[in-house]
Image (tube, rainbow, N blue to C red; front, side, top):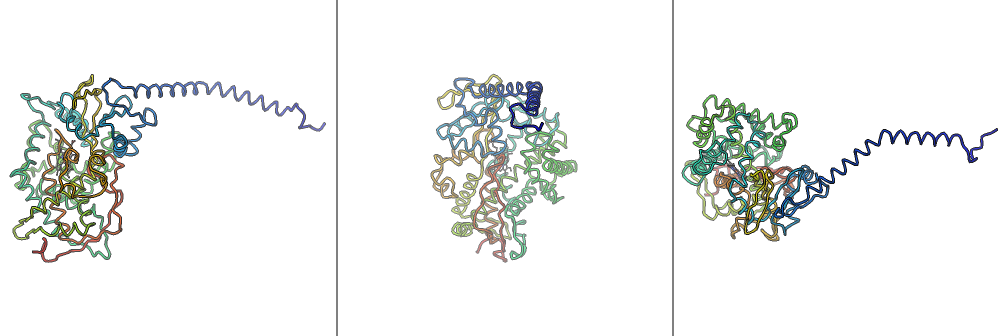
Length: 527
Ligand code: HEM
C-alpha cells in the first residue's frame, strides 16, 4: 500500500513528536539547573540593585539610580569617561549634591560651587584626600610596599603631632611655589629656557611640512620645565627619547590607576614610566641634584624623601610625579591658549602689541594691560578645558554626619565625595548663556572665583597655580610674537571629555598648523 501522507495517523509524525518529547525531557533535565541559576542570579541582581538604591540614612544626599540596574553608573563612567558624571550634574541643576550608587559603595557628587567651598573646609577626620594618596601613588608610580608604608605614617597630623612625609612635602612645595623671591627666580629661569627653545626654533618649510600644534607646544614645555627644575643635566636632556616615554606614561595614566595587571593592560604607560624612573634613578645616584643649576625645591624634595627613609630608586618615582605635575597641565593649557589667540585676529593683535622681550638682558617688559588680558585668556582656556574632580574620602568607617551650609548630610564611610569641576565650569547658572564660548573678557569683567575649579580647592589646591599662570602667559606670548601660526582647517576641535579627566583635556582631533617665523631680527615684538 502506498503511504497516504494525508491520513490522520502518521508514524513519522508520531516518531517526531516522541523525539520532541524526549528532547524536551532531556532539555528540562539538563537545563533546569541553569534556568534556576539564572532566575536566582536575576533575583539577586535586582535585590542588590534595590538595596543599593535605598538611602542609608535620612540625610544621605538624593540618590540618582542608573538606567541599567546595579552596574549602570560604573559602566557609564567606564565607557563615557568624565563626561558621564558631568552630564548627570548638568541634567540635574536643582541638586547641589547627589548620590551615585555603585556596587557596595557610593560616590557623592557636589555640583554647587558654594557647597563645594564648604565641603572642602570640613576637617580631615571627616573628609580628606590624603588617605587616598598611598594607594593612588602605589598604582600610578609603582611605589614599593615599604615606601607606601612610610607615606601612610602621620598622613593628616593634627597640630602638635609629628608630621609625616606627605605633610612635609606639601609644606615645602606650597612655600617654594608661593609668590615670593623663590618663585620669581623660577619664573626668570623659565623665561630664559623658553627663549632658548622658542627663540632658537627654526620651523620647516610650511609649504611642505604641517605641524601638530599640541605636540609642538608640549615639546617646548617639557624641555624647558625639565631644565628649570632639574638643571642642564636633567634626564630628559640626557636622553631626548625619554620625552616620548613621558607622554606614553601620561596617556595611559587611567590604565595604571585601574591597577589591573598594569604591565600588560597599560603596557605603554608602564614601560614609559619605568624608563623615566630608571633615568631619574641614574640622575640621583650620580648626585646630579646637588648641581648648582638644580632648583632649590628639588634639592629639598630629595632631602625630605631621604630623611623619611625613602630609597633612591623610590625617590626617582616621586620626582617623575613632580615633573608630571609641572609639565602636563601647563603644556595642554598653553596649546589651547595659542590656538584661541591665533584663531582671533583681534585678540592676536592685542596680545602682540605690548610685550617686549629683549634678547640681550632677557628682560621681559609687560604692560599691565597685557598681563591682565593674557591671564584672562589662560583662565578662560582652563575653564573650558578643565573637567577635573576634587576627591575626598569619607574617613570614619561608620560614616559621618556633617552640617554644611546649615543642612545635615550623612556620608557612608569609605565612600568618596567628588566636586565636579566639569559640571561647575559648564553650568549656565554659573557662567551665563554663553558658557560654551571662549570669552576671556568675562575674567576681565570680574568673575566669582568659587565657580572656577581648574586648580582644585581646599587643602589640595594646586600649589603650582601662580607659577603655572605666569609661565603659560609667557609661553603663549612668545610663540605668537615670534611665529605666524596658521591653523589648517576652519573648525576648532572640541575637547575630548570622554576620558578620565586627570588633567586639562586634550582636543578630540589633532590640530594641524603651518608655522612661519614672523620676525627674523629679534625675538620680541616690534620695538
Ligand atoms: C595649568 C596648569 C596647572 C593646573 C590646571 C593644575 C591643576 C592641579 C589640580 C587640579 C590639582 C589637584 C587639586 C585637587 O585635587 O583638588 C593639582 C595639584 C598639584 N599641582 Fe598643579 N596644576 C597646574 C600646574 C602645576 C605646576 C606648574 C606645578 C609645579 C611646578 C604643579 C604642582 C602641583 C602639585 C605638587 C600638586 C599636588 C598638591 C598636593 O596634593 O599637595 N601644578 N594641580
